[in-house]
Image 1 (cartoon, rainbow, N blue to C red):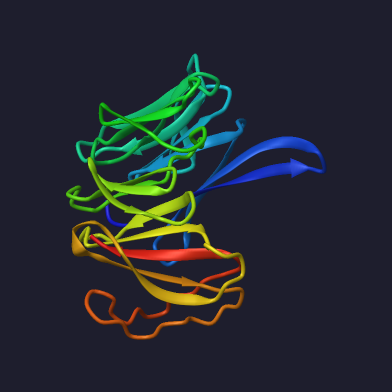
Image 2 (spheres, rainbow, N blue to C red; image 1 turned 135 degrees about the horizontal axis):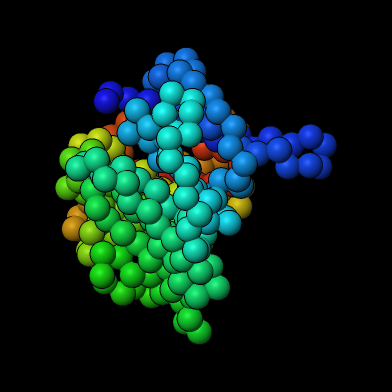
Length: 246
């Protein structure tokens, strides 16, 4: 199947909603096809042949070569989609006021957000509590070989069931390298606007590199141990990029 990128774009005529444009691109940004479907997209997935898209109203489409191949109307909003390694399409739905499946991936990982008096997440059957009510999109990512699965519970990163590191503020996004050895997390800086580059301790004697600042200039000094020089790392506004060596 190779590599590809699926993207959506909401279409309006002034204030009137026209639909959502679905597009499939090659890795170098060349469009393969585009199509417009009548839904407000909340989830998207592709296997580089098909593109699946789901909406807040429960609408669900599978497109191929710019044409709708399958359409359904589910009973609940669609919040997560992923094509698994076996080729199956995993669909996450639920009720935003009580509980919903907020994350699925190609490795079979599932995260469910439950909004009770004390909200919590259920990650692959394990209940974890922390922080405020879970976001609709839970920060999580798995490596290409599925050996590493990093996710955030409020301000704490986990690798599968093991705590990895507690960051200074709630985690907004997470990504994992293909080999699973490096994770990246985005969170608000400890002090808004502070420019800094430093190593932070994490579980298991690993190291974290954090860079932040209001300009676009990388601040990349050398550090001993696991904090090597990182190329082309940039920070913007008042968000920090944390690189964790897993």
